[in-house]
Image (cartoon, rainbow, N blue to C red):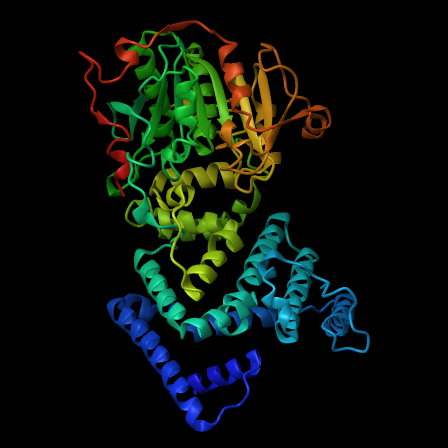
Length: 610
Protein backbone atom coordinates (compact mmCIF):
# COMPACT_ATOMS: atom_id res chain seq x y z
CA UNK A 1 0.00 0.00 0.00
CA UNK A 2 2.82 2.39 0.86
CA UNK A 3 4.62 1.69 -2.41
CA UNK A 4 1.43 2.12 -4.41
CA UNK A 5 0.54 5.35 -2.66
CA UNK A 6 4.05 6.68 -3.12
CA UNK A 7 4.02 5.89 -6.82
CA UNK A 8 0.59 7.45 -7.22
CA UNK A 9 1.82 10.62 -5.48
CA UNK A 10 4.87 10.72 -7.73
CA UNK A 11 2.60 10.54 -10.77
CA UNK A 12 0.10 13.10 -9.50
CA UNK A 13 2.52 15.62 -8.01
CA UNK A 14 5.11 15.51 -10.79
CA UNK A 15 2.65 15.44 -13.66
CA UNK A 16 3.45 11.96 -14.98
CA UNK A 17 0.88 10.77 -17.47
CA UNK A 18 -0.72 7.36 -16.74
CA UNK A 19 1.19 4.59 -18.47
CA UNK A 20 0.07 1.19 -19.66
CA UNK A 21 0.23 -1.50 -17.00
CA UNK A 22 3.14 -3.27 -18.67
CA UNK A 23 5.16 -0.03 -18.60
CA UNK A 24 4.37 0.70 -14.97
CA UNK A 25 5.19 -2.71 -13.55
CA UNK A 26 9.02 -2.56 -13.79
CA UNK A 27 8.98 0.84 -12.10
CA UNK A 28 6.76 -0.49 -9.34
CA UNK A 29 9.18 -3.36 -8.86
CA UNK A 30 12.07 -0.90 -8.53
CA UNK A 31 10.28 1.10 -5.85
CA UNK A 32 9.28 -2.11 -4.12
CA UNK A 33 12.95 -3.09 -3.93
CA UNK A 34 13.91 0.32 -2.53
CA UNK A 35 11.18 0.07 0.11
CA UNK A 36 12.27 -3.44 1.07
CA UNK A 37 15.90 -2.36 1.41
CA UNK A 38 14.95 0.60 3.61
CA UNK A 39 12.71 -1.60 5.74
CA UNK A 40 15.40 -4.27 6.11
CA UNK A 41 18.01 -1.69 7.14
CA UNK A 42 15.69 -0.25 9.79
CA UNK A 43 14.64 -3.61 11.18
CA UNK A 44 18.26 -4.74 11.39
CA UNK A 45 19.13 -1.57 13.30
CA UNK A 46 16.26 -2.14 15.76
CA UNK A 47 17.36 -5.74 16.30
CA UNK A 48 20.81 -4.45 17.22
CA UNK A 49 19.34 -1.71 19.45
CA UNK A 50 16.61 -3.48 21.48
CA UNK A 51 16.56 -0.69 24.06
CA UNK A 52 15.60 1.91 21.50
CA UNK A 53 12.99 -0.38 19.95
CA UNK A 54 11.41 -1.06 23.35
CA UNK A 55 11.34 2.63 24.26
CA UNK A 56 9.07 3.52 21.34
CA UNK A 57 11.44 6.29 20.24
CA UNK A 58 11.84 4.60 16.86
CA UNK A 59 8.08 4.29 16.29
CA UNK A 60 6.89 7.21 14.10
CA UNK A 61 3.28 6.68 15.17
CA UNK A 62 4.23 7.45 18.80
CA UNK A 63 5.74 10.75 17.76
CA UNK A 64 2.76 11.62 15.56
CA UNK A 65 0.31 10.81 18.36
CA UNK A 66 2.20 13.00 20.80
CA UNK A 67 2.38 15.81 18.27
CA UNK A 68 -1.36 15.57 17.57
CA UNK A 69 -2.19 15.82 21.28
CA UNK A 70 0.08 18.84 21.59
CA UNK A 71 -1.60 20.51 18.61
CA UNK A 72 -5.09 19.83 20.00
CA UNK A 73 -4.19 21.71 23.17
CA UNK A 74 -2.72 24.61 21.19
CA UNK A 75 -6.05 26.07 20.14
CA UNK A 76 -6.24 29.52 18.60
CA UNK A 77 -9.24 30.27 20.80
CA UNK A 78 -9.05 34.03 20.81
CA UNK A 79 -11.78 35.27 18.47
CA UNK A 80 -9.80 38.03 16.83
CA UNK A 81 -6.93 35.65 16.16
CA UNK A 82 -9.28 33.11 14.58
CA UNK A 83 -10.82 35.76 12.36
CA UNK A 84 -7.41 37.04 11.31
CA UNK A 85 -6.24 33.51 10.60
CA UNK A 86 -9.26 32.86 8.39
CA UNK A 87 -8.79 36.14 6.55
CA UNK A 88 -5.08 35.49 6.00
CA UNK A 89 -5.83 31.95 4.82
CA UNK A 90 -8.33 33.12 2.21
CA UNK A 91 -5.98 35.88 1.08
CA UNK A 92 -3.17 33.34 0.80
CA UNK A 93 -5.34 31.00 -1.27
CA UNK A 94 -6.49 33.72 -3.64
CA UNK A 95 -3.08 35.34 -3.85
CA UNK A 96 -1.13 32.16 -4.56
CA UNK A 97 -3.59 31.04 -7.23
CA UNK A 98 -3.44 34.45 -8.86
CA UNK A 99 0.32 34.58 -8.72
CA UNK A 100 0.51 31.11 -10.26
CA UNK A 101 -1.76 32.27 -13.09
CA UNK A 102 -4.70 30.14 -11.93
CA UNK A 103 -6.96 32.80 -10.39
CA UNK A 104 -9.13 35.46 -11.91
CA UNK A 105 -6.24 37.94 -11.92
CA UNK A 106 -3.04 36.31 -13.08
CA UNK A 107 0.06 37.74 -11.46
CA UNK A 108 2.11 40.22 -13.43
CA UNK A 109 5.88 40.22 -13.44
CA UNK A 110 6.30 36.67 -12.14
CA UNK A 111 5.61 34.98 -8.83
CA UNK A 112 5.87 37.13 -5.69
CA UNK A 113 4.74 35.18 -2.68
CA UNK A 114 3.35 36.85 0.46
CA UNK A 115 5.75 35.04 2.80
CA UNK A 116 9.43 34.40 2.20
CA UNK A 117 11.76 32.03 4.02
CA UNK A 118 15.21 30.87 3.00
CA UNK A 119 14.24 27.26 3.73
CA UNK A 120 12.08 27.40 0.60
CA UNK A 121 14.38 29.41 -1.67
CA UNK A 122 14.79 26.60 -4.22
CA UNK A 123 12.67 27.45 -7.32
CA UNK A 124 11.00 24.02 -7.16
CA UNK A 125 8.92 25.24 -4.22
CA UNK A 126 7.26 27.71 -6.60
CA UNK A 127 7.11 25.75 -9.85
CA UNK A 128 3.86 23.97 -8.95
CA UNK A 129 0.82 25.39 -7.12
CA UNK A 130 0.71 22.40 -4.76
CA UNK A 131 4.12 23.08 -3.23
CA UNK A 132 3.63 26.82 -3.33
CA UNK A 133 0.42 26.51 -1.32
CA UNK A 134 1.94 23.89 0.97
CA UNK A 135 4.92 25.90 2.15
CA UNK A 136 3.03 29.19 2.24
CA UNK A 137 0.28 27.63 4.37
CA UNK A 138 2.94 26.22 6.67
CA UNK A 139 4.51 29.65 7.11
CA UNK A 140 1.10 31.17 7.81
CA UNK A 141 0.27 28.53 10.43
CA UNK A 142 3.70 28.96 12.04
CA UNK A 143 3.10 32.71 12.33
CA UNK A 144 -0.25 32.11 13.99
CA UNK A 145 1.13 29.58 16.46
CA UNK A 146 4.04 31.85 17.43
CA UNK A 147 1.67 34.80 17.77
CA UNK A 148 -0.59 32.73 20.03
CA UNK A 149 2.41 31.85 22.20
CA UNK A 150 3.31 35.55 22.45
CA UNK A 151 -0.22 36.38 23.64
CA UNK A 152 -0.53 33.57 26.17
CA UNK A 153 -1.90 34.85 29.47
CA UNK A 154 -1.35 33.85 33.08
CA UNK A 155 2.28 32.78 32.68
CA UNK A 156 5.39 34.03 34.42
CA UNK A 157 7.95 35.68 32.11
CA UNK A 158 10.15 32.59 32.37
CA UNK A 159 7.30 30.22 31.44
CA UNK A 160 6.27 32.46 28.57
CA UNK A 161 9.81 32.42 27.20
CA UNK A 162 9.75 28.62 27.44
CA UNK A 163 6.44 28.49 25.57
CA UNK A 164 7.81 30.71 22.80
CA UNK A 165 10.97 28.64 22.53
CA UNK A 166 9.35 25.22 22.38
CA UNK A 167 6.61 26.48 20.06
CA UNK A 168 9.32 27.68 17.70
CA UNK A 169 11.05 24.29 17.88
CA UNK A 170 7.78 22.54 17.07
CA UNK A 171 6.96 24.76 14.11
CA UNK A 172 10.50 24.37 12.77
CA UNK A 173 10.24 20.58 13.03
CA UNK A 174 6.91 20.50 11.16
CA UNK A 175 8.28 22.15 8.02
CA UNK A 176 7.18 20.33 4.84
CA UNK A 177 10.85 20.45 3.78
CA UNK A 178 11.59 17.73 6.35
CA UNK A 179 9.39 15.02 4.80
CA UNK A 180 10.27 13.30 1.51
CA UNK A 181 6.76 13.35 0.04
CA UNK A 182 6.24 17.06 0.71
CA UNK A 183 9.66 18.29 -0.42
CA UNK A 184 9.84 18.69 -4.21
CA UNK A 185 13.64 18.83 -4.16
CA UNK A 186 13.80 15.45 -2.42
CA UNK A 187 11.17 13.96 -4.74
CA UNK A 188 13.12 15.01 -7.80
CA UNK A 189 16.36 13.58 -6.38
CA UNK A 190 14.56 10.33 -5.51
CA UNK A 191 13.30 9.93 -9.07
CA UNK A 192 16.69 10.79 -10.55
CA UNK A 193 18.55 8.23 -8.40
CA UNK A 194 15.89 5.54 -8.31
CA UNK A 195 15.68 5.93 -4.54
CA UNK A 196 19.40 5.50 -3.91
CA UNK A 197 19.46 8.86 -2.09
CA UNK A 198 17.06 7.41 0.49
CA UNK A 199 19.27 4.34 0.90
CA UNK A 200 22.34 6.50 1.52
CA UNK A 201 20.30 8.74 3.81
CA UNK A 202 19.17 5.74 5.84
CA UNK A 203 22.81 4.67 6.21
CA UNK A 204 23.65 8.15 7.51
CA UNK A 205 20.68 8.13 9.90
CA UNK A 206 21.50 4.73 11.35
CA UNK A 207 25.18 5.67 11.79
CA UNK A 208 24.12 8.79 13.70
CA UNK A 209 21.67 6.86 15.86
CA UNK A 210 24.40 4.38 16.75
CA UNK A 211 26.80 7.22 17.57
CA UNK A 212 24.13 9.05 19.55
CA UNK A 213 24.65 12.38 17.79
CA UNK A 214 24.08 14.18 14.51
CA UNK A 215 26.96 14.24 12.04
CA UNK A 216 27.70 17.60 10.43
CA UNK A 217 30.94 16.99 8.55
CA UNK A 218 33.34 14.37 7.25
CA UNK A 219 35.24 13.41 10.40
CA UNK A 220 37.77 11.33 8.47
CA UNK A 221 39.12 14.53 6.90
CA UNK A 222 40.67 15.78 10.15
CA UNK A 223 43.47 14.52 12.39
CA UNK A 224 44.26 16.32 15.63
CA UNK A 225 47.75 17.73 15.60
CA UNK A 226 48.07 17.43 11.81
CA UNK A 227 45.46 19.61 10.11
CA UNK A 228 43.49 20.84 13.10
CA UNK A 229 44.81 21.95 16.52
CA UNK A 230 48.18 21.85 14.78
CA UNK A 231 50.02 24.97 15.97
CA UNK A 232 53.40 23.65 17.23
CA UNK A 233 53.88 23.48 20.98
CA UNK A 234 54.46 21.29 24.01
CA UNK A 235 52.47 20.22 27.06
CA UNK A 236 54.46 21.76 29.92
CA UNK A 237 52.23 20.88 32.88
CA UNK A 238 49.63 18.25 33.71
CA UNK A 239 47.06 18.12 36.51
CA UNK A 240 44.03 15.88 37.05
CA UNK A 241 41.74 18.55 35.57
CA UNK A 242 43.85 20.04 32.77
CA UNK A 243 46.99 20.07 30.69
CA UNK A 244 48.82 23.34 30.02
CA UNK A 245 50.15 23.79 26.49
CA UNK A 246 52.89 26.29 25.62
CA UNK A 247 53.16 27.16 21.93
CA UNK A 248 56.51 27.54 20.20
CA UNK A 249 57.52 31.12 19.39
CA UNK A 250 57.35 32.41 15.81
CA UNK A 251 59.38 35.59 16.42
CA UNK A 252 62.94 36.29 17.57
CA UNK A 253 61.66 38.30 20.55
CA UNK A 254 58.44 38.04 22.54
CA UNK A 255 56.52 40.24 24.93
CA UNK A 256 57.80 39.81 28.46
CA UNK A 257 54.33 39.24 29.91
CA UNK A 258 52.95 35.87 28.71
CA UNK A 259 49.33 35.03 27.91
CA UNK A 260 47.31 32.24 29.56
CA UNK A 261 44.07 31.24 27.78
CA UNK A 262 41.15 29.50 29.50
CA UNK A 263 38.80 28.08 26.87
CA UNK A 264 35.39 26.69 27.86
CA UNK A 265 35.32 23.05 28.96
CA UNK A 266 32.13 22.55 26.98
CA UNK A 267 33.68 21.33 23.69
CA UNK A 268 37.43 21.35 23.10
CA UNK A 269 40.03 24.10 23.33
CA UNK A 270 40.91 24.09 19.65
CA UNK A 271 38.05 26.37 18.68
CA UNK A 272 40.92 28.87 19.06
CA UNK A 273 43.28 26.74 16.94
CA UNK A 274 41.23 25.32 14.07
CA UNK A 275 43.56 25.82 11.11
CA UNK A 276 46.33 28.19 9.99
CA UNK A 277 43.87 30.61 8.38
CA UNK A 278 41.53 30.94 11.38
CA UNK A 279 43.69 30.18 14.43
CA UNK A 280 43.69 32.80 17.16
CA UNK A 281 46.52 30.92 18.87
CA UNK A 282 48.76 30.98 15.79
CA UNK A 283 48.00 34.65 15.15
CA UNK A 284 48.75 35.60 18.78
CA UNK A 285 52.08 33.74 18.62
CA UNK A 286 52.93 35.60 15.42
CA UNK A 287 52.30 38.91 17.21
CA UNK A 288 55.09 38.03 19.64
CA UNK A 289 53.09 36.64 22.56
CA UNK A 290 54.19 33.65 24.61
CA UNK A 291 50.91 31.74 24.54
CA UNK A 292 49.93 29.14 27.11
CA UNK A 293 46.55 27.46 26.81
CA UNK A 294 44.58 25.15 29.11
CA UNK A 295 43.28 21.88 27.65
CA UNK A 296 40.56 20.68 30.00
CA UNK A 297 39.96 16.99 30.64
CA UNK A 298 36.63 15.53 29.54
CA UNK A 299 34.86 14.20 32.64
CA UNK A 300 34.53 10.54 33.52
CA UNK A 301 33.02 8.74 36.51
CA UNK A 302 36.04 9.54 38.67
CA UNK A 303 35.26 13.27 38.37
CA UNK A 304 31.69 13.07 39.71
CA UNK A 305 32.44 15.39 42.66
CA UNK A 306 34.50 17.94 40.76
CA UNK A 307 32.92 21.32 41.50
CA UNK A 308 33.19 24.87 40.18
CA UNK A 309 35.65 25.52 43.02
CA UNK A 310 38.05 23.06 41.37
CA UNK A 311 37.97 24.93 38.06
CA UNK A 312 38.59 28.22 39.86
CA UNK A 313 41.56 26.71 41.69
CA UNK A 314 42.84 25.21 38.43
CA UNK A 315 42.94 28.65 36.84
CA UNK A 316 45.18 30.06 39.54
CA UNK A 317 47.34 26.94 39.29
CA UNK A 318 47.85 27.51 35.55
CA UNK A 319 48.64 31.19 36.16
CA UNK A 320 51.24 30.25 38.78
CA UNK A 321 52.85 27.66 36.46
CA UNK A 322 53.30 30.33 33.76
CA UNK A 323 54.63 32.93 36.23
CA UNK A 324 57.14 30.51 37.71
CA UNK A 325 58.24 29.10 34.36
CA UNK A 326 59.00 32.49 32.83
CA UNK A 327 60.05 34.29 36.00
CA UNK A 328 57.47 37.08 35.63
CA UNK A 329 55.27 38.71 38.28
CA UNK A 330 52.05 38.57 36.25
CA UNK A 331 50.37 37.22 33.11
CA UNK A 332 47.69 38.33 30.69
CA UNK A 333 44.60 36.09 30.67
CA UNK A 334 41.72 35.23 28.37
CA UNK A 335 38.51 33.45 29.38
CA UNK A 336 36.07 32.25 26.73
CA UNK A 337 32.36 31.73 27.57
CA UNK A 338 32.17 29.63 30.78
CA UNK A 339 35.95 30.07 30.96
CA UNK A 340 35.38 33.84 31.13
CA UNK A 341 32.67 33.52 33.76
CA UNK A 342 34.97 31.42 35.90
CA UNK A 343 37.94 33.73 35.30
CA UNK A 344 35.91 36.68 36.60
CA UNK A 345 35.10 34.72 39.77
CA UNK A 346 38.69 33.53 40.16
CA UNK A 347 40.03 37.07 39.94
CA UNK A 348 37.48 38.21 42.55
CA UNK A 349 38.69 35.45 44.89
CA UNK A 350 42.36 36.31 44.25
CA UNK A 351 41.65 39.99 44.88
CA UNK A 352 39.96 39.24 48.19
CA UNK A 353 42.97 37.24 49.29
CA UNK A 354 45.50 39.81 48.11
CA UNK A 355 46.78 37.97 45.03
CA UNK A 356 45.23 40.09 42.27
CA UNK A 357 48.64 41.30 41.09
CA UNK A 358 49.30 37.89 39.53
CA UNK A 359 47.18 38.97 36.55
CA UNK A 360 48.04 42.04 34.47
CA UNK A 361 44.87 41.95 32.37
CA UNK A 362 41.76 39.88 31.73
CA UNK A 363 40.05 39.46 28.37
CA UNK A 364 36.54 38.03 28.29
CA UNK A 365 35.23 36.40 25.11
CA UNK A 366 31.40 36.28 25.16
CA UNK A 367 31.28 35.73 28.92
CA UNK A 368 28.33 36.23 31.28
CA UNK A 369 28.19 36.78 35.03
CA UNK A 370 24.63 38.14 35.32
CA UNK A 371 22.23 35.52 33.96
CA UNK A 372 18.99 37.48 34.24
CA UNK A 373 18.87 37.81 30.44
CA UNK A 374 20.83 34.74 29.44
CA UNK A 375 18.69 33.97 26.39
CA UNK A 376 17.01 30.82 25.16
CA UNK A 377 19.28 28.47 27.11
CA UNK A 378 17.19 29.38 30.15
CA UNK A 379 14.28 27.51 28.54
CA UNK A 380 16.08 24.32 29.63
CA UNK A 381 16.67 25.45 33.20
CA UNK A 382 13.70 25.21 35.52
CA UNK A 383 13.22 22.91 38.50
CA UNK A 384 11.65 20.14 36.43
CA UNK A 385 14.35 20.19 33.77
CA UNK A 386 17.14 20.40 36.32
CA UNK A 387 15.77 17.16 37.78
CA UNK A 388 15.86 15.59 34.31
CA UNK A 389 19.47 16.73 33.86
CA UNK A 390 20.38 15.11 37.18
CA UNK A 391 18.89 11.84 35.95
CA UNK A 392 21.14 11.97 32.89
CA UNK A 393 24.25 12.12 35.08
CA UNK A 394 23.77 8.83 36.92
CA UNK A 395 27.36 7.73 36.14
CA UNK A 396 28.86 10.89 37.62
CA UNK A 397 29.06 13.03 34.49
CA UNK A 398 26.79 14.59 31.88
CA UNK A 399 27.37 13.10 28.44
CA UNK A 400 28.56 15.80 26.05
CA UNK A 401 26.11 14.59 23.41
CA UNK A 402 23.22 15.94 25.48
CA UNK A 403 24.94 19.30 25.65
CA UNK A 404 25.57 19.28 21.90
CA UNK A 405 21.89 18.61 21.24
CA UNK A 406 20.91 21.49 23.51
CA UNK A 407 23.10 23.95 21.63
CA UNK A 408 21.96 22.57 18.26
CA UNK A 409 18.33 23.15 19.25
CA UNK A 410 19.06 26.84 19.71
CA UNK A 411 19.62 27.01 15.94
CA UNK A 412 17.73 23.94 14.79
CA UNK A 413 17.12 25.02 11.14
CA UNK A 414 20.88 25.42 10.60
CA UNK A 415 22.32 22.78 12.92
CA UNK A 416 19.68 20.02 12.76
CA UNK A 417 17.16 20.25 9.94
CA UNK A 418 19.60 21.45 7.32
CA UNK A 419 21.53 18.19 7.78
CA UNK A 420 18.38 16.07 7.95
CA UNK A 421 17.51 17.32 4.47
CA UNK A 422 20.98 17.20 2.95
CA UNK A 423 22.33 13.99 4.46
CA UNK A 424 19.23 11.93 5.28
CA UNK A 425 16.70 12.88 2.58
CA UNK A 426 18.99 13.89 -0.29
CA UNK A 427 21.64 11.35 0.71
CA UNK A 428 24.52 13.74 0.13
CA UNK A 429 28.00 13.00 1.43
CA UNK A 430 29.40 15.04 4.30
CA UNK A 431 31.63 18.01 3.45
CA UNK A 432 34.85 18.61 5.43
CA UNK A 433 34.51 21.70 7.64
CA UNK A 434 36.87 22.31 10.58
CA UNK A 435 34.39 24.33 12.65
CA UNK A 436 31.73 21.61 12.39
CA UNK A 437 34.32 18.95 13.25
CA UNK A 438 35.05 20.88 16.46
CA UNK A 439 31.31 21.31 17.09
CA UNK A 440 30.86 17.54 17.07
CA UNK A 441 33.88 16.81 19.27
CA UNK A 442 31.92 16.87 22.51
CA UNK A 443 33.17 16.79 26.10
CA UNK A 444 31.53 15.43 29.23
CA UNK A 445 30.96 17.61 32.30
CA UNK A 446 31.30 16.58 35.95
CA UNK A 447 27.84 15.99 37.41
CA UNK A 448 28.33 18.13 40.50
CA UNK A 449 29.82 21.06 38.58
CA UNK A 450 27.07 20.97 35.97
CA UNK A 451 24.27 20.80 38.55
CA UNK A 452 25.68 23.61 40.71
CA UNK A 453 26.56 25.85 37.76
CA UNK A 454 23.06 25.66 36.27
CA UNK A 455 21.31 26.00 39.63
CA UNK A 456 23.45 28.74 41.18
CA UNK A 457 24.20 30.84 38.11
CA UNK A 458 21.54 30.31 35.44
CA UNK A 459 18.60 29.49 37.71
CA UNK A 460 19.24 31.55 40.86
CA UNK A 461 21.66 34.16 39.39
CA UNK A 462 23.75 34.18 42.57
CA UNK A 463 27.11 35.16 41.08
CA UNK A 464 26.10 38.83 41.01
CA UNK A 465 24.98 38.73 44.64
CA UNK A 466 28.03 39.67 46.74
CA UNK A 467 29.24 36.78 48.90
CA UNK A 468 26.27 34.55 47.98
CA UNK A 469 28.70 32.01 46.54
CA UNK A 470 32.15 30.97 47.63
CA UNK A 471 35.09 29.10 46.15
CA UNK A 472 37.29 26.95 48.33
CA UNK A 473 36.06 28.80 51.41
CA UNK A 474 36.45 32.34 50.03
CA UNK A 475 33.29 34.37 49.34
CA UNK A 476 32.93 35.71 45.78
CA UNK A 477 32.24 39.40 45.30
CA UNK A 478 32.73 40.44 41.66
CA UNK A 479 33.06 44.10 42.62
CA UNK A 480 36.47 43.23 44.11
CA UNK A 481 37.71 42.30 40.62
CA UNK A 482 39.57 45.44 39.53
CA UNK A 483 41.83 43.79 36.94
CA UNK A 484 41.88 45.81 33.67
CA UNK A 485 39.33 44.15 31.41
CA UNK A 486 38.74 43.77 27.68
CA UNK A 487 35.15 42.56 27.20
CA UNK A 488 34.11 41.23 23.79
CA UNK A 489 30.50 40.48 22.82
CA UNK A 490 28.85 39.30 19.59
CA UNK A 491 26.00 41.29 18.10
CA UNK A 492 24.24 38.07 17.00
CA UNK A 493 25.30 35.80 19.86
CA UNK A 494 22.52 33.32 20.70
CA UNK A 495 24.37 31.56 23.54
CA UNK A 496 25.69 34.58 25.44
CA UNK A 497 23.34 37.37 24.26
CA UNK A 498 24.71 40.88 23.90
CA UNK A 499 22.47 42.33 26.63
CA UNK A 500 23.71 39.68 29.03
CA UNK A 501 27.42 40.07 28.24
CA UNK A 502 27.11 43.84 28.61
CA UNK A 503 26.12 43.37 32.25
CA UNK A 504 29.68 42.24 32.95
CA UNK A 505 30.68 45.91 32.64
CA UNK A 506 28.36 46.71 35.55
CA UNK A 507 29.90 44.24 38.00
CA UNK A 508 33.66 44.73 37.58
CA UNK A 509 35.82 47.60 38.77
CA UNK A 510 38.94 48.90 37.09
CA UNK A 511 39.49 50.03 33.49
CA UNK A 512 37.15 48.38 30.98
CA UNK A 513 37.29 48.34 27.19
CA UNK A 514 34.09 46.98 25.64
CA UNK A 515 34.17 45.68 22.06
CA UNK A 516 31.10 44.66 20.10
CA UNK A 517 31.94 42.28 17.25
CA UNK A 518 29.90 41.41 14.20
CA UNK A 519 28.39 37.91 14.03
CA UNK A 520 27.87 35.53 16.95
CA UNK A 521 29.30 33.26 19.63
CA UNK A 522 31.92 31.60 17.42
CA UNK A 523 32.42 33.67 14.26
CA UNK A 524 32.41 36.88 16.29
CA UNK A 525 35.43 35.59 18.20
CA UNK A 526 37.23 33.51 15.58
CA UNK A 527 37.62 36.16 12.88
CA UNK A 528 41.15 36.31 11.49
CA UNK A 529 42.15 39.74 10.15
CA UNK A 530 43.16 38.19 6.82
CA UNK A 531 39.57 37.08 6.26
CA UNK A 532 38.45 40.73 6.10
CA UNK A 533 35.01 39.79 7.40
CA UNK A 534 32.45 41.44 9.67
CA UNK A 535 33.18 44.54 11.73
CA UNK A 536 33.45 45.74 15.31
CA UNK A 537 32.44 48.76 17.38
CA UNK A 538 34.57 50.51 20.01
CA UNK A 539 34.87 53.82 21.84
CA UNK A 540 38.18 55.63 22.13
CA UNK A 541 41.74 54.40 21.77
CA UNK A 542 42.69 50.91 22.99
CA UNK A 543 45.85 52.30 24.62
CA UNK A 544 43.91 54.59 26.99
CA UNK A 545 44.80 53.23 30.46
CA UNK A 546 41.75 54.59 32.26
CA UNK A 547 38.93 53.90 29.80
CA UNK A 548 35.49 52.99 31.05
CA UNK A 549 32.38 51.61 29.41
CA UNK A 550 29.35 53.93 29.17
CA UNK A 551 26.53 53.54 31.67
CA UNK A 552 24.22 51.73 29.25
CA UNK A 553 24.48 49.53 26.19
CA UNK A 554 22.28 52.02 24.34
CA UNK A 555 24.81 54.77 25.08
CA UNK A 556 27.61 52.55 23.81
CA UNK A 557 25.79 51.84 20.55
CA UNK A 558 25.05 55.53 20.03
CA UNK A 559 28.64 56.71 20.53
CA UNK A 560 30.76 53.78 19.36
CA UNK A 561 32.64 53.81 16.07
CA UNK A 562 32.34 50.98 13.55
CA UNK A 563 35.54 49.55 12.08
CA UNK A 564 35.50 46.97 9.26
CA UNK A 565 37.22 43.63 9.77
CA UNK A 566 38.55 41.81 12.81
CA UNK A 567 38.89 43.27 16.30
CA UNK A 568 42.05 41.21 16.98
CA UNK A 569 44.43 44.09 16.03
CA UNK A 570 42.57 46.37 18.46
CA UNK A 571 43.09 43.77 21.19
CA UNK A 572 46.83 43.36 20.61
CA UNK A 573 47.30 47.15 20.80
CA UNK A 574 45.46 47.05 24.15
CA UNK A 575 47.73 44.21 25.36
CA UNK A 576 50.91 46.01 24.30
CA UNK A 577 49.81 49.18 26.10
CA UNK A 578 50.45 47.52 29.49
CA UNK A 579 54.09 46.69 28.87
CA UNK A 580 55.71 46.52 25.43
CA UNK A 581 58.99 45.17 26.84
CA UNK A 582 60.32 42.26 24.80
CA UNK A 583 62.75 39.48 25.62
CA UNK A 584 64.57 36.95 23.48
CA UNK A 585 62.54 33.87 22.57
CA UNK A 586 65.11 31.50 24.09
CA UNK A 587 65.31 29.20 27.09
CA UNK A 588 61.92 28.22 28.41
CA UNK A 589 60.29 30.65 26.02
CA UNK A 590 60.99 27.93 23.46
CA UNK A 591 59.34 24.81 24.95
CA UNK A 592 61.15 21.51 24.63
CA UNK A 593 64.55 23.07 24.03
CA UNK A 594 67.80 21.90 25.56
CA UNK A 595 67.34 21.16 29.25
CA UNK A 596 63.61 21.87 29.21
CA UNK A 597 61.61 18.84 30.29
CA UNK A 598 58.14 18.73 28.77
CA UNK A 599 55.43 16.09 28.86
CA UNK A 600 54.46 15.62 25.21
CA UNK A 601 53.78 17.44 21.96
CA UNK A 602 50.74 19.64 21.54
CA UNK A 603 47.81 19.18 21.40
CA UNK A 604 48.35 16.60 24.15
CA UNK A 605 46.42 13.57 25.38
CA UNK A 606 43.53 15.21 27.19
CA UNK A 607 42.01 16.64 24.02
CA UNK A 608 41.83 13.13 22.57
CA UNK A 609 40.01 11.60 25.55
CA UNK A 610 36.31 10.93 25.12
